[in-house]
Length: 412
Ligand code: ADP
Image (cartoon, rainbow, N blue to C red; front, side, top):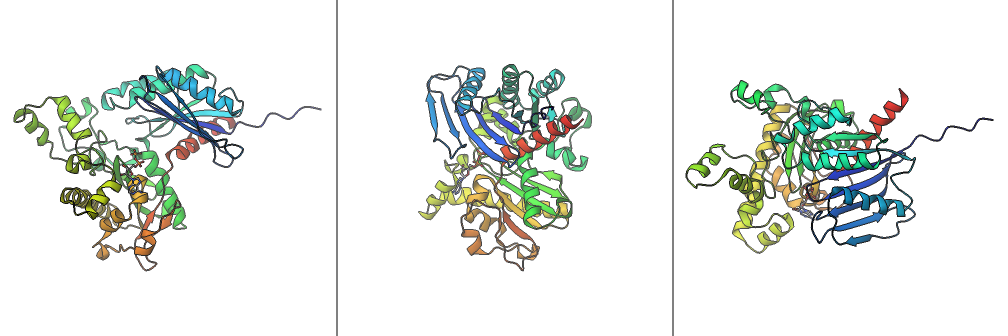
């Protein structure tokens, strides 16, 4: 009698490596169940911290390690130890792949990709257009490869979903030779979230993604809008970098580019100072000193004028993008809110769609105020355009994409 072959591996470890942090989740793709989640923060400092939560067998409760973790390699080794303590180690034959969030995939990567030396070199070539993000993502991939060289490492790109944008939306109206020489164009970000949320919205409407047009508003600390026609992105608000578009927690979003020349020539600021001003000290924080929408709402309730103005500027920009993407799409089936602000801040949703009845948008204020962790429609049944709240799940989407790719490969 021959013994049956071992079952195909079904687990995916998702890694999101930032400059000083690593977030991770281990998922079993048979039922999309989370087996463990965790975070290592302040890597490279004396006060590093690892928080690990196993979710198997009812979950044994959160475990925490504090004390210096020197670099990403040490961080990943510590994560591997924690997982091993729960019987979920990286050496498990059930692990099918490691899925890595990679922020910038440029024009080359329009789909998840198994990483080899050449792919890694290409991600490195993109560092000049993503200096804050790609280096950390590369470190994460290198470290994971060193720990499990035999395991497929799959890169899932934040930009990939937006590669379907037509040239009319993706190009800036600047000299073509200059733009091409420096790879200057609109790439868009948060693509994994826009892909997941637009697909889940179609499901919520009981339709196939090909049959619906959706405006997705991803409102977290970073924020972006996208216009998705029949499952394909046709426009998005972030551009060459995540600075363009909506008002964000600390980023300005759209400004006249001449503001930067003015700050150099008139205010005497350096390029780095301007970069910091627009990326870290602008948006809600620049306008009113707070970037947490909960705090801003609390201040507004107390009659704080600066908080009110910051909120109004945030909403005004959001409304402009809803209108713009309505025009880009021609017909809209749903406007969907997601991420920290979009999922939780009912007043933001109410203010963003207020006055848009002529466009077919309306809210049921009772449904809008209800708190729920589930995808839901918050517009009345008569509204021509559904308003929906769909919690995003970038880790699940990365795991799905990585698993689809490696299980396809294993069928070859
Ligand atoms: P990111 O992943 O971009 O860091 P998130 O999607 O987690 O951000 O969103 C974080 C933001 O969500 C916070 O800065 C805060 O403004 C907002 N937020 C979170 N919870 C609530 C809430 N209950 N009400 C209003 N805003 C909230």
